[in-house]
Length: 180
Image (cartoon, rainbow, N blue to C red; front, side, top):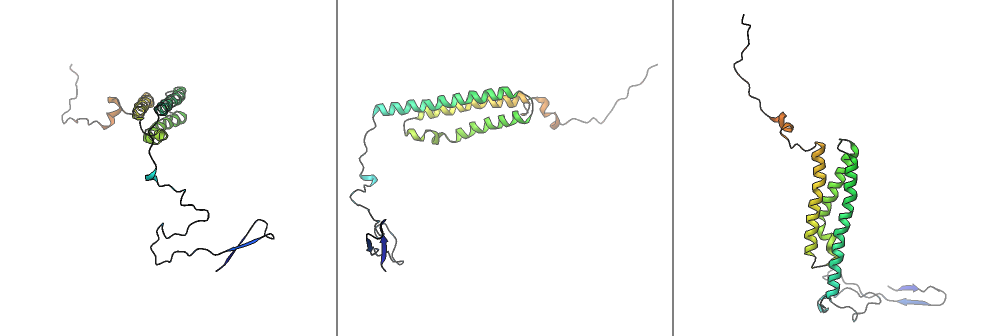
């Protein structure tokens, strides 16, 4: 089978080429028996194992750690905006305060679940920053939980559990009379 490749100026030149033989269906498909792409140069390809690992520059590591501390600072600044919205929502049980409360709790939980993804761009050596981030997010979680307590959504007092208490029923009863 012969294919014809047309150049941009088709009337100038027509180049024909034969495709390389494709692997047979019976052959086991491996990298070695795949046809090489046009422009592929084996001299340029370098395997990952042959790359020499260079030592990390101390200045670069310090800069990455500083940037990781910046992530903590940014999340702290974002929390103050959320805390202001929670404050302005008041302690009433309405749709706005519930939405803000749910959003703030969800944001904190999602950031706790994505700690590794948040710090993945900094590579290794940011364990301190990860731990500080987790502690900071848990501290931030205390504000929405306090807000839920103040709104009366979480049952924490004895009066909240009165409906589930068993009252003893007495078999005897006394009816007072008139002494006269």
